[in-house]
Image: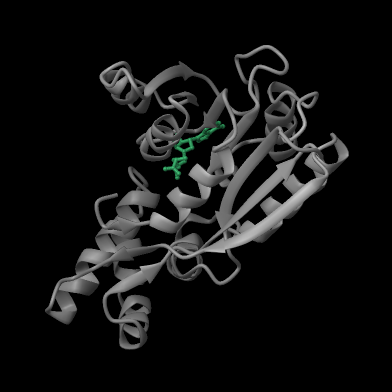
Amino acid sequence: MERLERREEVAAIRAAVAASRRVLDVGGGTGELTRAVAAQVGHCTTVEPHERRVAALRADDGQEQAARIEVRSGRAEALPFPDGSFDAVIACWVLPYVDDLERAVREMARVCDAGTPGARVVLIGGTPDNELVGMLNEACVPLAGEAHDHQGYLLGTAARVLAGLGFTDLALHRTEAAVHFPETDPEDRVDAAAAVMADFWYEGHPRVQDMRLALRPVLRRHFARRPHAVGDQGVVLVASVPGER
Ligand SMILES: C[S@@+](CC[C@H](N)C(=O)[O-])C[C@H]1O[C@@H](n2cnc3c(N)ncnc32)[C@H](O)[C@@H]1O
């Protein structure tokens, strides 16, 4: 996470929720975006299924009176909130992990107050040319025996479900983000990147060492073109209820 630079994404999320009062961050993870939202609107609720992350997020909760975060344990597919509890729901880099995409998106729409003009669901996923996802698909996915990650499909499906539920004002824009590898020695850099990518995305997988090896030639090819960074290009989808707020 320390190598990831995603200022554009953080700015896009802050702008998207700037006029909101009650914001839910689904799958808060390390809480970087939860804290950015809280700093913007004064408060942010997050729901996260991983107990270790819930505990880490709770350790932050309440430390800063001006920007409080409230942490709940739970999953996108069954959000633990009554209908219409929020006027903005965000879920960034979460859709690839949910078990039931349409159900998760319907839940986000349910807890978002569709009676409020401008109420919105804000999603971030990868672009079709996302460099990280492309390399993981090439090197790791065959070893994991999984289907290729295709993030365009996830946001397309989410947009269709949300439009059918009244969130018909759709806006899309691209954000540039990157994971940086400043190591000067080329092979040290390849090793560092292979470790970061395999261990972050496939933590605990029995073939994680094979994945590191498989990533090396892919990374050498990539660094010949872009020497110190791997792009994590994103698409921000803002799906709003029509009207001003
Ligand atoms: C790649 S991280 C993104 C974290 C954060 N949104 C961000 O952008 O920094 C994905 C997060 O989704 C969470 N997650 C996985 N499955 C989920 C589900 N079914 N419902 C909600 N969150 C989920 C993971 O625990 C993890 O924290």
